[in-house]
Image (cartoon, rainbow, N blue to C red; front, side, top):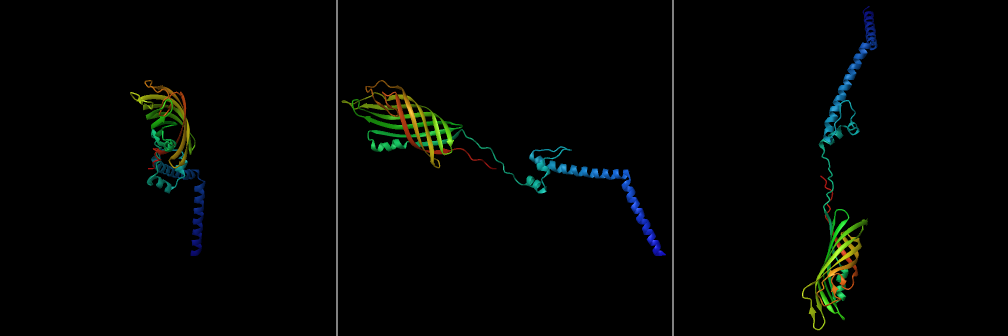
Length: 281
């Protein structure tokens, strides 16, 4: 009797629970309550995720508005990525600094120095400096000491200094070679002595000036060492007239009677760069 009563009570409890769950699931009011709680939970979770994403995105200069979708780089990052962004130092690349004076080259006119060995009546010791600025512009300065002794009908000796200042346009066809062309002005001041009997000399130093069109090229031989050749065509602008020698030699130019004078210079150049490397902080 007691066993049958217990089975009957258990059966009633199971039926009650079954109908309670069925009615609760079929009731629209109960369903709306479940949906409302579920939406509230999802909205709270979305707000929490949005707050975390904004907290880490502020360090990257971005802000995510409420109701909007976060950027892909924030939405798809896990916790370790966010911790790395906030705790690990970043490498910052600073833009290259370009100085006004980029390269300085020191030239040695080796061919002129070599000719001094076998030419006893003609001596020339010349050097030059090239200053490369921003862009393709280059300033070139040449300075030399020359001594020339000519024999014949107008035998004389010219001894003095001369200089050449050039403004050049540089072209870089490839990393190993440079080409340039431009215009230059030359100036010479020297002592002129006649070898006639009796020897005479000008009462004051002779001054001459000329303009020259120049062009040439350079090739890198080893690191920072270049070999180059320069061609020029000079035109004599002015010269002193208070001298008895008509066909005298102008150091750096040539014979005074020749209004146009070609020129060939072979040199070696050591280049020093002032361009700074990229700074990494």
